[in-house]
Length: 359
Image (cartoon, rainbow, N blue to C red; front, side, top):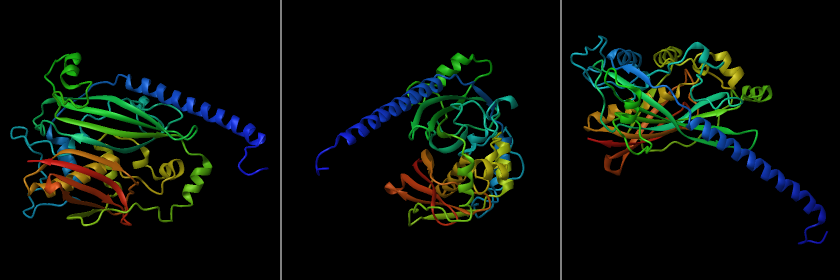
């Protein structure tokens, strides 16, 4: 063969490869378009709740031994607060209100619900990250009626054919609702097609869920062979101005699952987690790490007279039960924003976030 010239054999090989690439591209595009239409047009039920202090109080009791406390110990209150002198909803505590309102028959084999799933073969789910906004400040825990409106804003398919991952972005809007208000009127007050418009929401949350195929027996066997080996680390930022370490226990994971009405087996069943998902131990919930991150951050902001106005975060590596995690942070932009993150037991970066603050 003469250097610099393309042989007829190379041409005959290249043509079917290009054709295969086009077929795979069309299949990938078709899947993405189908799921985008199916999920973003899926009508999800409105979730109502009453903002009584009991769930928030139980979460405080669950976390009080793990979070930093004020020197005078006032942060620990074992008596249920009264609705006659209501306190504001603590940051991230909205996560334990408005649980998924599904029956047992609407749970999948892994304990997750059917509300947001793209369907088979994407039967595994992980919490990838998201963002939070608090446009109206925290609502009061006075027992008033409230609603959470959910919709799937966007669907993205990544990966080559046969190995795709489906990323579903869910938007949740929480707002007060009068007794007897028609659902259509509630929807029009709180939900807007423009996601930048807060409407009459007090909390706006976007969460990204990743749906994947079940692992093969060979993949599980390969994962199990790495259980005792250190994973790859992403280097964490340096120069943290605060650091706080927490040891998540099985009791913590169970309580948080109960408070959030979450039956996902990766937080509850070690045998399932190891032999079906290929993880070495129970995983700490994505919303639990978010709660820990924001709670420690807000503790450090209190002395500065600041609160979180917006928070963006991404989960980069799994965190496991009985392995110490460390919540860290440092200010930037003269304190109007903060970089916050969670380090795993080996110091690697597990969760990364950015908070914008206000008075």
